[in-house]
Length: 108
Image (cartoon, rainbow, N blue to C red; front, side, top):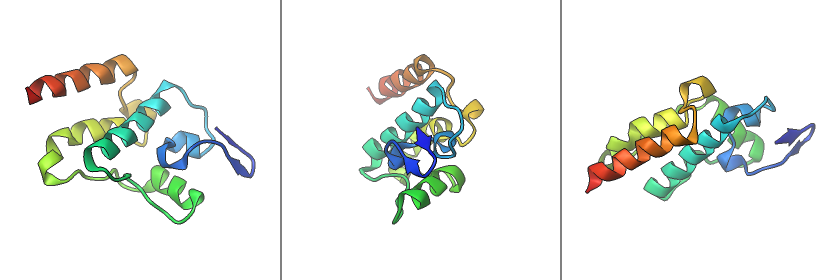
């Protein structure tokens, strides 16, 4: 959530629409989940910056980060969860969970 002149939330996990002060829905949470998935896989945040505003700018405008070669099989999940346009993301948590469960089953 943003208000004039103030950031409420954690900029490392903000969706582009949230960072721009636009209306949000569950797809904003899907984006944040994608950031966490990226972080869990790499032990790094996808974007870093010296200020909250610069970090938000990256969420809005920077390319979706690429995973290291050994994790490339998860890139499609990162691309879809962290899509800049909410319409390009998974449209529900259930949809994301099904993809994650499928990925887990592929690992066994």
